[in-house]
Length: 281
Image (cartoon, rainbow, N blue to C red):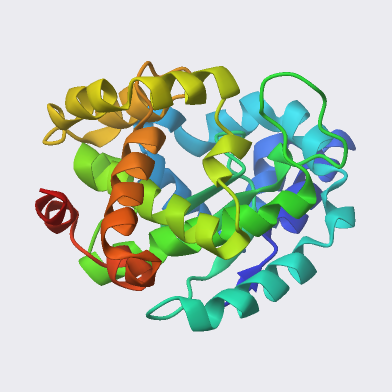
């Protein structure tokens, strides 16, 4: 398990551009070339739906000012130290080998994600989505210490992907596999930290609505379990998705543990999605 501080070179490239260097050549030389595998993996994971036709150069050009501003405080977050400590805690709890961790940028897509790097699932932290003092309002920014729930969540994703041979990209996943990836990761993290982590990023009103309409929500999602790709990902995992794929996975996996006990968590992490449904009846 390696921890790679990509963000430091990204920040160097943006600072060089702020001093007058041409932006894309600076980024290419100082950030992309040393971390080509990471950036190619990011592009492979999200594809043209995020990057557009012009790819990474256009994305970097469009987001550079905001990215520079948001990444500037990141060296003070002690993120390397935090990540090393948390991953050491996870090592005995997860089957298989731990994924590599890239302290990087996700270009404001998310504070954390599991992406394909060199053909393997790896954890990426988008440090531009962290702030030592997140402003009030809808959840978008995260405190550096909140990485303690993001890393177990993403590590559970990576372990499940490797165990089941799942592609680390929504582009190649069915909706059923997407919701089970989220459900298993949420329950693993809940058991580790002793709290309901879905409540830390899902709007309280939407969470309450999903609780009240659980049966109808599960039935509606089940009708689309055979669909997949970025279209299904956007429908179910956007912030304002009418039916939350996070809730669907969480509810199904919670039912599984209620039936079989929390000791089944390790087994559940690596159980094929269709088998989870079968055992739920």
